[in-house]
Amino acid sequence: MKNILVVENSKEQIYLLTLILNRIGFNILVETNLVSILDTIDTKNIVAVILDIMLPEISGDILIKKIRYIYPTVPIIMITALKNVDMECICLSTGANYYLVKPVLLEDMEQVFKQYL
Image 1 (cartoon, helix red, strand yellow):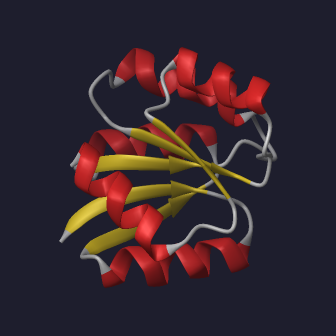
Image 2 (spheres, rainbow, N blue to C red):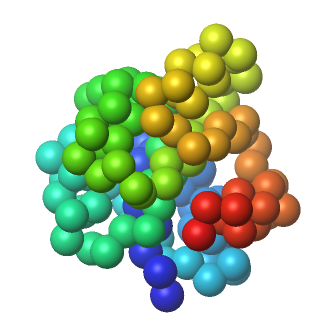
């Protein structure tokens, strides 16, 4: 199975994403600590990052820039409760590949991963 890093602080959302992504053939690794996030991408053969915008340590839109600078080819998929056109534009312009609004449907995830992986 290919590894996907999920950066999310909601246990319920992690559970749902794990169910969805396992069903379509991916292994899930979860991180919330900034140092661990970058280390996991580097050492665990991550094929994509799913990133929430609202995180305890750092805002997701700032984290996009850090990930994109170090790992320019890793797809970044934003998943957020913020249905906000301005935030979507910021995320996409700073390096996110896709912006999904919660709740995420299985069909949406399948479509996104078929496009980017």
